[in-house]
Length: 122
Image 1 (cartoon, one colour):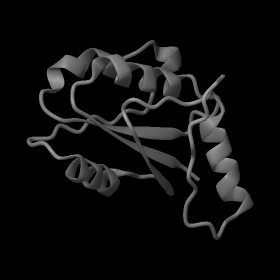
Image 2 (tube, helix red, strand yellow):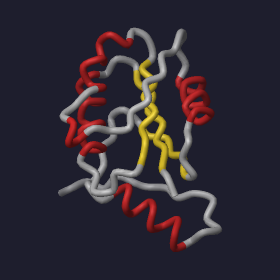
Image 3 (cartoon, one colour):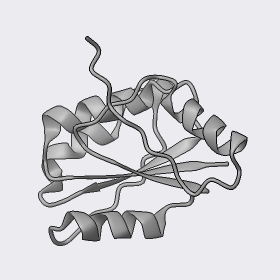
Image 4 (cartoon, helix red, strand yellow):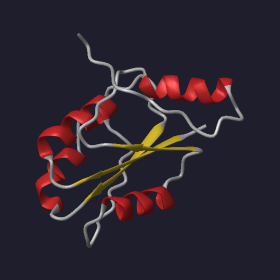
């Protein structure tokens, strides 16, 4: 059961870097992140790489025009996962998040979706 995450962003280097770092740190590595930077992508090119030990399966889809819904629809159409999730560029994940998602769908095979929520650390 493979997981695909769709991540669209508009040049928000400071926050999208934190999101990608949290995904690189996942204990469950069997997922892809479809990265859709809305123009201009050049400000985000350095985020795509990373140390080989923490590399993400990060297909990079270049878009010609703006539009979050359009970007997400393109990402969904390109996803190869059995589970497809939408993530926001200013979000980040605990290291076991992909593991929890996979276990939830394995425990409830008829589930059509799950929703995660952010909890303040304090």
